[in-house]
Amino acid sequence: MVTASNSINALQLPHTAVLKQETKALVLQVPDKALVVKIDSAVPDWISPSIQIVVSIIAATVSVGTILWQMRKQRELTLEQQKKETKAQLRLEAYREFQRLYAEFNASQKPAVEVRLILAALQIQLHGIANNIPVAPMQYREPAFRNMLDRLSNNAIELVFFLERHAPLLPGFDVFKLAFGAALDEIRQNYIKFQAVLFRWLPIDNPNYSPQGSVPQFLYCPTITSDAISEFQENMGPILKSLGRLECWASDLSIELQNHLLGDYADQRVEHRVPIDPDYLVVTVDSAHREKLMRYFNEETDYGQKARAAEAWARDEQLRRMEGPGE
Image 1 (cartoon, rainbow, N blue to C red):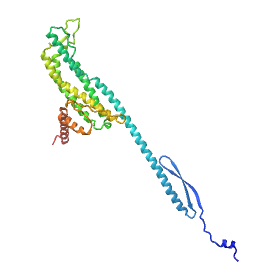
Image 2: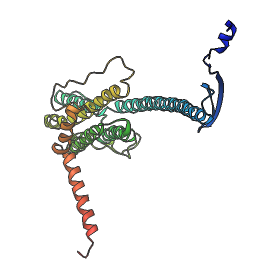
Image 3: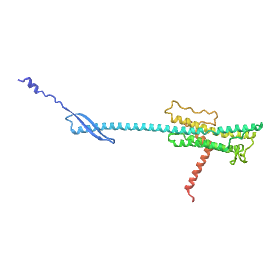
Image 4: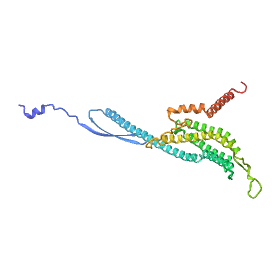
């Protein structure tokens, strides 16, 4: 007789595999430091040890790859942020430097005012002579005026040097170098004619003059006539125009630098100048106008034509030297 207990013993119960929970730790050396990667694996005891090792290496590789990617990404973000901060600092420093140079330039903008004061003094002299009213000799002199022009030109050249020093931060601003060069060349040419008028109608002091001696105060002191006023007014126009163009283009430079260097911090852009006279054209780095301006300064101004002629001569001279004297 088969009992219940024997029946139970006779049954073949399925064998349950016991999973072994293991924690493995791999130490991996990366450029910055050693990383300890822990791998928890629950594998059946029937999996061979070699397969367990392969699975552990794959898991460790994936973990390390993720960590290295995160580190590389963090490094890239850090470098990008450092670049932005450095660029912002360079821009602010460049703008502070420009503000100082521009203030010096504006402080030297006295020649145009001086021209008008000289005209007024000539008119007072003529009025006194015509009405027999004693008037004091004019205080204006050609050397003093020339020194004003020299100071203005030097300050303008400092602005050009500024553009050259900060060229990597100022793409397209080379158009202002051409504008300043053209304006300064115009001033020089117009002053050659205007200087002759100043020598003719302004007094020339005697360096040996002494109030206690008999030496005259002036080496030359002309009597002002209506012809002097007419000649002065005729020749003052070109020099005033060239001075005005330089002043306008320096103002355009200030506007462009504010928009370019401070654009990330400003609440709005500074509007460009709107000229009444087309001769006082607006200089800008805007791509829609820059190429036209470059052609104008290079091809339609004396400065640009002379610069291109000088470049052509230099190229020809270099070729001649390369060919040698025997050819």
